[in-house]
Amino acid sequence: MFGLTRARKTAAVAATVAAAAAAVLSAPTAEAASSRIVGGTTTTTSTYPFMMQITDASQDQFCGGTLVSATKVVTAAHCMVGETTGSVRVVGGRTHLGGTDGTVSRVSDIWIHPDYQDVTDGNDVAVLTLSTSMPYTPVSYVDSSDTGVYASGTTARILGWGTTSSGGSSSNQLRTATVPTVSDATCSSSYGSDFLASDMVCAGHTSGGVDTCQGDSGGPLIIGGVLAGITSWGEGCAQAGYPGVYTRLTTFSDEVTEQVES
Ligand code: ARG
Image (cartoon, rainbow, N blue to C red; front, top):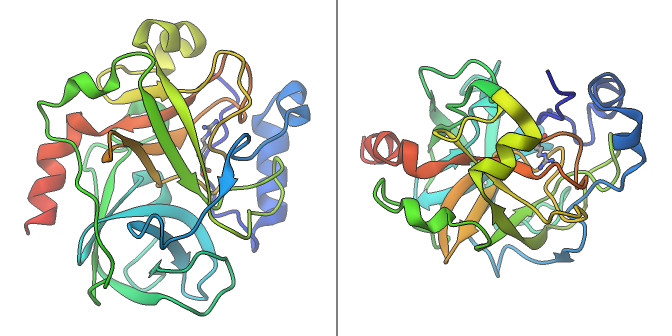
């Protein structure tokens, strides 16, 4: 079993929990590595209007999400464990954490993939139904037949407010970067049986340095302008030889559509 860095309801509030978790779950070498969307740049929700903050009732962000219709948001199942419709908010149009701008919606339904157990067992996908429509342009997501989008070396965009140091505080401003997709064979050699090619896809440079990190979970992996993955897990962040692992959305596209249309 690897010392996985999972998405935690870290962010600002649970920084001590995150630090403790990181200390336990990550190797010392992982701790030394810089952990953020390294090599990325700050951006805005005007540029990426589908980029949602998933927050607690106090509007403290703990995960990302992707707007796929006016009232539906795709995120990671592991972000929703222990949450209820009353405990979660979705915030659109807010580039900075702690801002008061944008649109805040309550959630009227949380669908977690029924087979979800743990990130390394796959099925890391959830769909939230919003009580309030988001006045932002959604992004479309892959069709189940679009499996070619993951071809090794394809440029993928990652986005999030994740931590800027391991176990540290989140980036105040939305950040983005691009990373190449990694072949299933290469990812298997990194992660062994924890990598399930049916449910996951990896992305990152061989030398590391660019990656998602804690707090980015649930956010999008965009390929060719379309939502193709969900930030899920990894060994530390941005480490050489350990790419980020994303939910392979083509596998779940039909189930997501069922929820989006329900
Ligand atoms: N589980 C993480 C989250 O806490 C995402 C981690 C992604 N890790 C990585 N090395 N890409 O938000």
